[in-house]
Image (tube, rainbow, N blue to C red; front, side, top):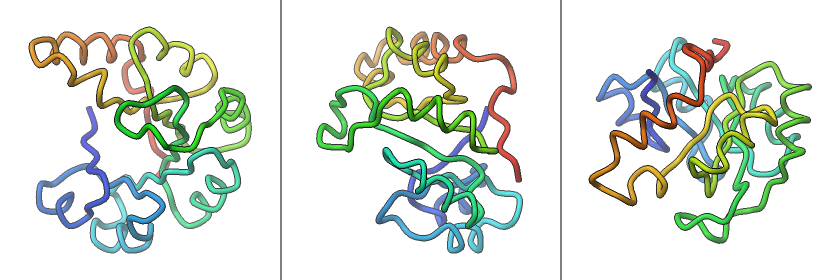
Length: 152
């Protein structure tokens, strides 16, 4: 299992994480790469734009993330992405694709069937403190072992 820190390459280095995720205002891919080295996994939020993903890959991103796909309690005003974007991205991009935003156990398969290699969840995982482990295992069961392999 991979451990990716959101928006903090210094922390990622300090805790020996597998990588860092960079958002629109978080910093640059090159800065994260410099902090973490050539083998770290660097991911980038691309919101609802395939062009953002193409640019990120050209700058060295190992994976790209799109979303929000569903109404999100964590980021209710995040840009809406359409499922067709995952179809497009999976046909045109050479790196893994992550889906973000409003994901639940009830809609995750839909994202995977449209081309998501991984999903990012917050509320659905942590809303019931007594069920975090079971929920995490249920999400994990949606994927084949080693399905998410960033190209480094």
